Image (cartoon, rainbow, N blue to C red; front, side):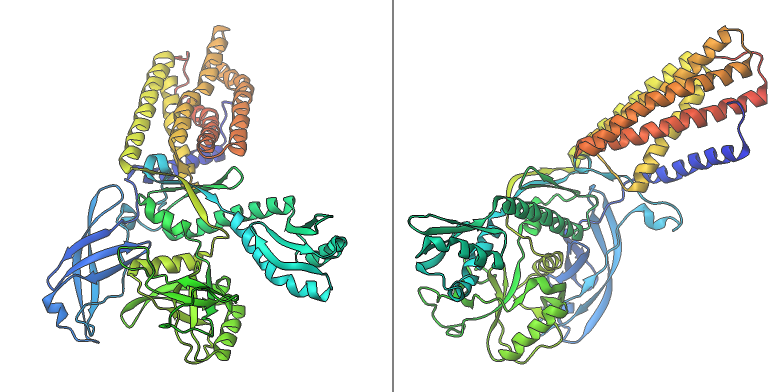
Length: 616
């Protein structure tokens, strides 16, 4: 145990050096995305308001006599110093080049302005590691939401679809009924003329959708067709899983790091977004179903006509997406055909852009959607095509000519943020069902900063007490153990940074616990060396026996703790997993530093000094 091969020495030194290098970025200040909301910018030629949404920033003129003299088509490029307040309250300055274009109304328009993030990483060589440990919601602040997936909406839609589709098969199978067919809640209800036809009806229903079951009263013939219990469970599980995936896609578009999105219970989803303090914006983004579809307006009605008191059987009255300012009342209502000509599920891309100096959303279909869109516009030239989002009409333009390219634009009275948000929602996909928010909390960055300071204080106090104890008890050997302890912490932070793991308060607790446990192995070794010295062994023999005989005990004790940490990670969730991660990484790091790093220092000292006695 007192012999170290050269390759082992190189390996230990390399691991320690990499640990320090990869942990170092966490000491250089936190890197955070730029947060800009209504930042005023004054420059030589104008006065602007900067609005940042997601990863794009737009500049809109708020009044400048010199720039307003620009005619449409003319442009001028100027550089303005912009003062930005980041997520941690630090004021940062950047010079931004802005190209301003004139327009017919005298107002100024610009395209996108690229603002880089303000952090130290931009000044470092590209080959150096720059990853930092991500801070969780309790440390960085952010938004906490708990939502319920209203999967009953899916059941209702499926039941209504069955009610529409079952009529013709019933006639073809010659199954007699009394009265009509109605969709009531979670069941299709009809009355069979002969209750004995229930078996034949089940066959018809199975051909349409095998998940439905038929239940018939043998006396009255009243029949209910509803989902089987196992089909409801499967539908609910799929709805929650799909909702989690779509919520994750939408949150990722915000540019936040490591959101926590997980299932709770049967039909609930927990959403935690560190660094995003606007809970209303997060709710709007993830709570909008964003189900897009293309319908023709009913052939008996055109915009501007009075709406009938009741919609025809194959039509429905839809509100406009645009609302009267200051109210929730729609600007207009439309009579829309129930037939869905093109589904929004065929969309493959949607981006905010400018058209005639107004924010619009451009979209593109996949091959199937492009074909349906082309067929619809070709067969209905001259008619109105309504673009619906969650059953509200965004716009209803006239089809002037067939659109064969599989792409188009959505025009409406959008603000820049609304166009950006709508394109984000369409890209991420539609939620399978509506979300109902049950709980909402916003954690401020100041609370997170307090938590970090408290965690630092706890770690520092623990470190000081361990250092004092080890040096006072074991002298020089204790000082070696303290040096190994610093490498242990560096390795923990390096692994967390490399994995881009999220550090939470329980994670800090795991690190503090590791500080105490990291010296346990050294204590066992040093006490064993003392016993060997008491048995009159030579220094080399005592150190060799101390390390070799304590090794089994060290491995056994740490392995059992590592098993517990693994089970916590596998079976726990949220804070429990954060604690398990830091504890597990800390155990492995402490075994390496105790068995390899401390031993290397002891052996190096032993070879160089050839001591007669051991100061321990």
